[in-house]
Image (cartoon, rainbow, N blue to C red; front, side, top):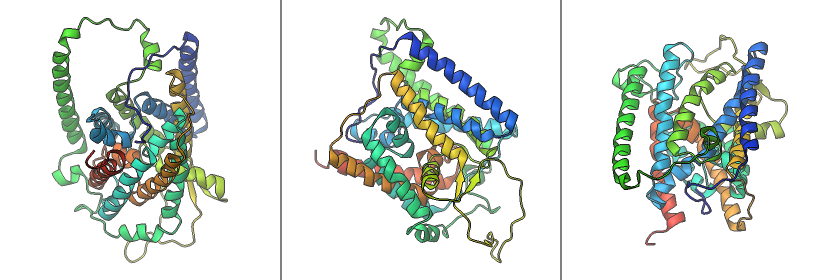
Length: 418
């Protein structure tokens, strides 16, 4: 969270009927058109466009940035965004359980590479404070016109590429040797540790989350009882949804539901995983600076792969840099969706920033990208998606990021003794 950031609040928006109605109509037509064209051509990668647009729209509606979700606990004693992030996870668990049981998706939790999760998580946790946002945060804040986030967004792919293709590649690979697997050789998850099926754990966790939320809401309503007679807004509900800010848990539910559509779309596009953004930012840089590349845009049939004596894939030639078009389309449309949301609620603004903040944000972006690449993901890929898939490694990443974020927030944003 950057120093210029303000907490989510209610803003008086003066948006005429034309813009929000036009946005609604164009949005519905865009989603329908993308699905129809994808079905007709078999290019399901095109569905990444409406998914990315909606993802950016939902994030911007409540300023649901992972960095601010963690930092605001320290700075403002405000846990609403952190709660919203957890709602994303719990809702995604239920949606993934439904998708898995119906055969729509194949669960693919990330491996328990504990050294990468610890080292990458620590670097990432520091970087997101200096950058003023996590990877998805800098994307949607760039759509709002935040110049610090734009500077960080320039630095992020530099950090990712340093790990993926540059001087930190060997270091990241050496950390990956420290991997822990379950008894059957697969990823360590809550399901593998407890012996309970994924769907049952999802129901238990989501049920507990709902019960706690209802309890907190009941107590909150009791405190606000004297004001129960306050007048409600007279605006049409659709206009309120499009032009007013959302509570973080509103965005949490919306993103959790969207995550299943993202999983299905991504799997049909050659990438069997739900929402993620880090390598999409890298791939945009690769497309702009490298040629030729290996494009991934549709599901490929399983192929026999030669393996060495240790069971690892045998590389017969130096591979070209591969670009996952689903991720590229997602991150580009994420910024667009955020921009439209910011315009609708009067939040778009290109304001000058102090040069020192922009410089710090740029180098913070490099740290953010490097940390995310070492750990194999960011708040979206490793926390929203990874924890929802019950990966124990991603849970370790989550905890490490939060602790590193809090320590950096205390030192950089607040200062000990203040």
